[in-house]
Image (cartoon, rainbow, N blue to C red; front, side, top):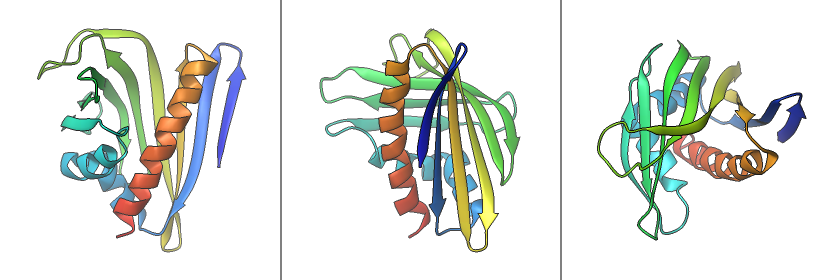
Length: 161
């Protein structure tokens, strides 16, 4: 289930999914670089490949996800963890690097958006609610809705195996 809203200046997206896995496993899939690489990389657009994943999941820690598209261009997302509360909540910023082809953190493009991942135990299942907000446009939100949909589908395959 997903909802897309624009309230005032806050254009946001909210997606809820239920996984047949304990929330500790789902949380670890978001915070362990090797696990993250496996499911997030599988969601990359056709012809694209996940080049590198850096995850320092602690308040103030940073992450960097570098994807190389089929045309050779890079799509590199970076951000800072604002909140890390195992196994129930992650809050992090989300921005794109201007170049993104290097091995280290580069200059970012505005705007900075915010992602909140909340995990609730539902017996042997986990209910995940992802809220991505502060989009500059509804078009950007809609593109992210498609991307997050693919990512969460792959996350489900990963955590349920």
